Image (cartoon, rainbow, N blue to C red; front, side, top):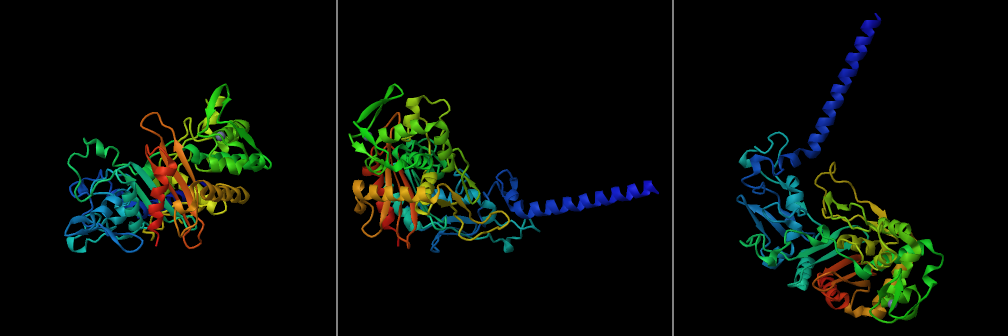
Length: 450
Ligand SMILES: [Zn+2]
């Protein structure tokens, strides 16, 4: 009798395991089936790249960015808009890995759970996608970057919606140049620099060092430093662009004093600096709607004292993505909480894409002090009208030294206006001066805000 009982129990367990397995596979299938079917490795789609019946891609205002007509993929009718939106939309290939047409090929495609990819021609219709992107802003960013290489990120710090992810160099997806692989002009053209590139952040990183000081030292904002333009820290020189004299933190931020923040990084030490950088997105994977971005790096394990000082002003080996930088400004504008950025205005698959969360980068007191410093810096160093005559902008520039070809020019900031809660980051590679090269690009993009 005992034997029979044991056997019944075994059969029951096996039956339960069987059904659990079925549930698991069905769930997995409903989440990932279209993705698996649309993988480039699938021979069925190799000839057509899977876009011949893909859905239409719209920007936030209903502008068509890409659509399939008679089995052919066509893009926006305006060539500049096509180029400006290249890295967001993609081309017929899968070369731009973070583009919507690569990352969401399955969502756009005409896969069907009953027919698979063998859907009868008459029934083939892809799913449309509406993006949070504003094609007008993309175009303004693309035109402002001109022949420079660079990137512009703009996103809504009250919601996380990405409005602009422009990157240059770009090309026309409808007429892909024949010499794209050999012409230096197109070097790195498959990369969306907003999310897939990292750069030395230069003085924009002083926001991170200031946050570390405010979080670890009582009344850190009042501590002063007498800047004479250069000083030895850790036995080697740290230099400033100008002599600031006696400065507190707000004035040091405004005048971008390297010595003030370099000395602070050394006083705070490696652990406190690393903790703060990591709280603000460094050494972490940032994704938006499932798309992976390049990791920002803050690693001072092997840094000398002098290296640590330079790391506090965004030099040494510090690297940051433009998207990460925009998120830092967003968190400062939004009381310390950065919304995770997203690009899909409507969710094509709630099982696959989760809702949008916030990430606490700063406590609210630190955020409000940095807010004030960026406000003061924009007003007293750059001039608010350098950004906009109508929007009230807070900002910090950076001029990041690199080994070859002149310094990278940065600016990051946000609009104070409730109606336009926008945070941004701009880089112009080898632009030499954040103020002269990056600020005008930010101004052009903000002018496109309706
Ligand atoms: Zn100085």
